[in-house]
Structures are given as structure tokens and as C-alpha cells.
Image 1 (cartoon, one colour):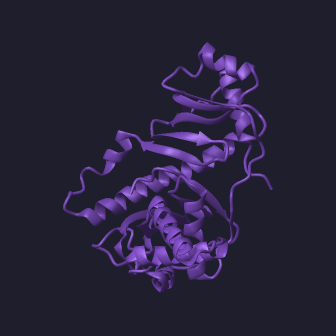
Image 2: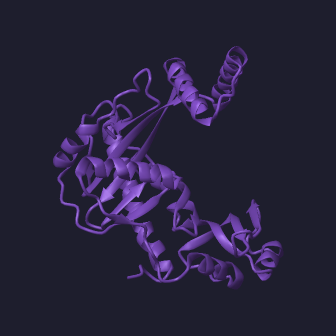
Length: 301
């Protein structure tokens, strides 16, 4: 339940669906396991687990969703080996060259033949919509997984216009100034990790871990013109994170004090515990997102 990564998207129009209405729309694409010849299956499942039937769980005015993803694992080396064997056999038996179009057709046949015997892997992506604050927060480290979530959501509800947040001050330059001038905002504490990059597409990259970010070693790289692309931070004793210049929040770690606030809920009442954890987590994430935007001069018009 505790998100590990955050990709935040700003809702550009109001979100007026009730939890019940949203759940009905999501039910159109409820999760169904992969068929024998199907490589990928996507669908919605109850975010609170098997004890609940709600596809959109409401708490504190926010809506929690869970997308399940099942993918057949078919190693490319296996397909390539079988393809080369088949091509060699055709060329030897028929005395002719197998060209690209036929190779692609043979490859498709091999994939379809192997899929029913392939192992499958299941993963899940959580997200929550905050209609009042006009955000959706997707727990995904990659932009591709977040977009996959949003695309299926749009397919179910018809329209869901969102934008990546834009800020007035460049995050990379601002974070570089924090280190160079040692003027980190008062409610943040430096971690021991950063990524520094030279400007330009072919610029060098330096990754520092387990080091004092105010040391001479890091200062030397900054003086040479490198800028901060990622920076480890802790915020108000509530959580730690790695903040990226694209405003993605990676490797979130919520404090023990925050996570223990619901310890009085019996372990047997799993649904109540998940619900309470979601309320704590979403309060912290929404507050942090607004603070992050403020750090970089607020949202650009």
C-alpha cells in the first residue's frame, strides 16, 4: 500500500465521478488472466485485495485504484534460436534465401507456438486520484508504466485529461544551487546520494552514493559545470526520497513513526489496516507534492 515511486499528473479539468460510477466503468476492463496465446493482460482489480469487491476505493475524498498486469515471459534468445533453425532448414531443403518479410512471419508463428507453454509474471500498479487537489499519483518508476495505467483509465471513462506539472524554476539548476551554496530549504535534509550530469546530450554522468554531498569531491564536480539530475532528500521526518529533475519522486521510504500510527488496528482486520494506511500515505504524498512545486517557484501558467 505504501507507494515506492510517484509520478504526479495534474488534472486539467474537474473529476466528478463518484466511487460507484468509477467502479462501474472500470468493471468493463476488470482483470482477466492471459489466454493461452495472449502475451499480455491488463485489467483492474480491487485495491484492498480479495476481501473487497470495490474497484475504486474511496477514503478521505481520494480514490485508490489498482491495475494488474500479467505478461508471458518468452526470452528473445529462445525465439531467435528457433527462428534461425527454421530458416536454416528452409534454405537447405528448398535451396532458396529466406528474406525479411518471411522471417517476420516465421517469428510470429514461433511466438504463437511458444506462448501457451511460457511462464507468466504478474505485477501491479497502484494510483490514487485526488479530485479536490486535482492530482493523480501513479506508483511507477517508469513513464511507460504510468502512461499504460492512464491510457487504460481513459479507455474506461472516455476522457481523462492530465499534464505533467511544469514549474517556473528549473529543478536541475535549483538543486545544483542547493548544493553549491549549501542553502537547502529548512524542512529538508540532504541524503547521501546524487546524480550529476554535464549539460548536453553527450555529457558525462557521475553517480555518488554513501558520500557527504557537501564534500569537496562533489563540489569539484559542480565547479566543473555538472548539474544535479537526482538528489536524495528527507522531508520533515515523514519520508525520504530521491528527487529527479523531471519531478519524479523515486525510492520513497516513509518514516517508521508515520507507518506505526495505525499499529492499534488489529492485524486480522486487513481491510481496515490498508484503508488507514492509504489515508496516512495519501495525506503525506499530496502535501509533499505541493511543497515540491513551491520549491521550484510554483506551477508555470
